[in-house]
Image 1 (cartoon, helix red, strand yellow):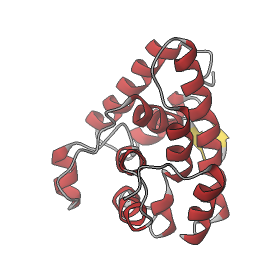
Image 2 (image 1 turned 90 degrees about the vertical axis):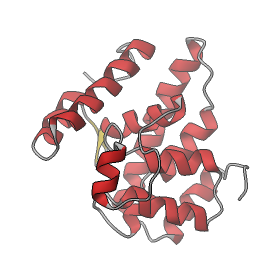
Image 3 (image 1 turned 30 degrees about the vertical axis):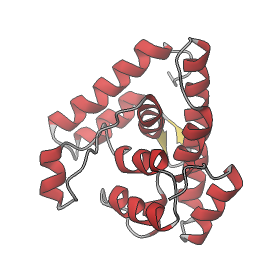
Length: 179
């Protein structure tokens, strides 16, 4: 497995080769733009963040949607990413971007391999958070995402999304997030 990140163009080509829809590709591009803005704000505030990893990870976070639009797109995305020889930090972003993370108990219930599915690194958290602020290809307030998730997810899952939001707000403030 390579540790070299693919270029933006290569990442987009991987989405095409995997047969992601135009809708999914557009979503990934919007998430990548927002995630990069958030990462740049973190960097301006003196935080150590890999801007390139954030962009490439965000572009590829939904590659698993080429095969499924269920929550399982995260683990399917990991399989695709490994087959493409993508570096581990990108694979981790794909694995950990769903919701505010998936606990070990939830992963077991879903039949997923034993692993960590909650964002750990700043880059993973940024991509997961940016994804919660983009619905389709439109940027939306976190409250809209939380309201939508509340209809389908357990309160503990909603709390993880809220904690991710609170953590990111503490790092970057309101300047890069929609009203």
